[in-house]
Length: 301
Ligand SMILES: O=c1[nH]c(=O)c2[nH]c(=O)[nH]c2[nH]1
Image 1 (cartoon, rainbow, N blue to C red):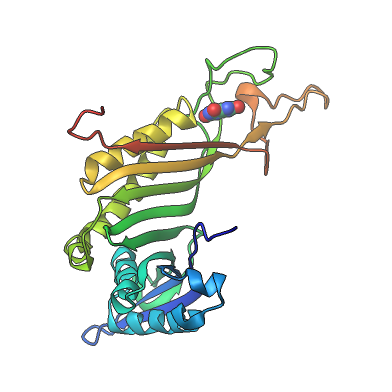
Image 2 (cartoon, rainbow, N blue to C red):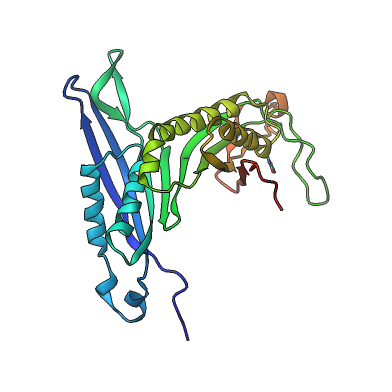
C-alpha cells in the first residue's frame, strides 16, 4: 500500500513588474519580482484518484498573482507575499496553506547629470531581496533574505590555530583575501494574520537595510579570525537591532584566491608579503553555515 506523505503544487517563475507613478512629481518607481505560489491542503485525491475537482488550476493561481498585484501594494515583499499566502486558504476551504516565494530584482535609479533620473534604472549586480511566507492555520511564518551579494576584502582576514595533523597541508595565515556570496536570512516572529503583518510594514524595509548595512560593515571592519567568527558577529548585531527577528542564518561560501609561486622565473617573489597576482578559484570552496537565535526569556528544559 502507498499513500501521499506530502504534496504541494502551484505556479513558479511568475515574473511581475509594477510601476508606481507619482502624479505630482512625475517620478516613477518600479518593482520587478519572480513569484512562486504553492498550495497545500486536502488535495490528495488529485494525485491518488485523478480527482481534479480539488485542483485550483495553476493557471488560475498565476492570474490571481497578477490581479492581487494590481489591487494591493507589492512592497514591502513580506506584505505582498502575506496577502498572497492568505488569499488562497481564505478563498478555498480545502486549501489549508500556501508557500509563497518572492525574489525582488534590483532596479537602481540612474544618476544622470548629477541628478536622480525620474524613470531610468540599472541592474547593479546579481543581489536579490527574497521573501518566503508560509500560511497555515497557526498564522504566517515569514523569512526574509539577501542572496547573491558578492563581496571581497583584500586584507584584514586571517586563518590560523586550526587542527594540524596528517591530513593538513594548509598553511596558517595572518593576512589573506576573503570573498563570499552573501546568503543571509532572518526569520520573523509568527504573525496571526495579514493585518498584523501590515502593522509591521515599515519594519521589513528597515530590517533589510540593517541586515545589508551590518553585513557589509562587519565584513569590512572585522579583522576576521575565520568566516565562522565573522558571520556570528553579523548575526548577533542583526538580532540586537531588529526585535521582531527571532533567528538569523548565514550561508557563506569561502571563495579561495590562491597565491602563485613565481620563484621558478628568475626568483620572482609573489608569495606572502610579496603576493600581488593571485589565481581566483571557482571550486572547490569552503561552505560555512550557521543559525543564531535570540535567547528566549524562558530557560531551555
Ligand atoms: O574561515 C575559514 N574557515 C574554515 O573552516 C576554513 N577551512 C579552511 O581550509 N579555510 C578556512 N577558512
